[in-house]
Image 1 (tube, rainbow, N blue to C red):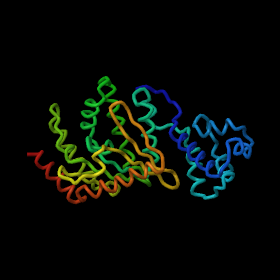
Image 2 (image 1 turned 45 degrees about the vertical axis):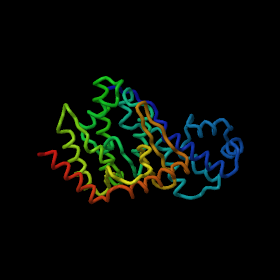
Image 3 (image 1 turned 180 degrees about the horizontal axis):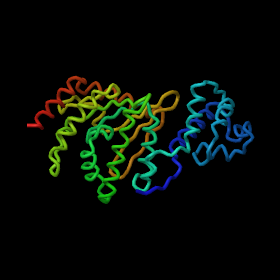
Image 4 (image 1 turned 90 degrees about the vertical axis):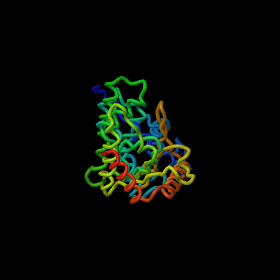
Length: 289
């Protein structure tokens, strides 16, 4: 497996965006803010655009220059500065994992929660190994078999966030009923085992599952699936959108709020949790016969 270890950029981008937002709110130019720190303007510009690193010890004085003295904000941004150069386990797959996917795994590892509407596939954090291999092979049409196997390993490794010590990731997934009927010709037991996996993982206190029934009323999810990634403290949430050739992020506060509102309506249109699990259990039982 390739072992190239580039510096991850997503934490640095989030930190730079937050610092820029606080500077603008304070009404300071780049030059004026940099002068407070004894820097030249281009250095602060590079920090805000994630092209330069800021030391954790420099975060608090910079924020104070912006009138920010909230310990929660300071601690959160100092944490991002501290972790900006931290290498994640996924970096060992850097020849396989695209930069945008690496960014998402990094976000997921820092996150407090993920709210996902899944109209086409079981969410990656809930997939069995066999389901991951089959669906990745079907979708990653330009990938060689060994790359598919590596990507399936990555998807399985991501699931460690569900059981991490202290603060396991909270997952709320709404899965369309049509996904549960998916068939796999080569490995017929894949669907049955995946349904069993959903029932098992639903017993975890940090996992909530709902099924969007085939006869649901109209809802915002008809436009497509998305993942809303939530962070603790003052850090803004992020939305992931995926397609065949990659992924994109929605990071504007008002735009993310739109997706949060949409998820609430999707939840309301879906089957209640107990009914959802009962449906999955009936389907799993039929698969065993």
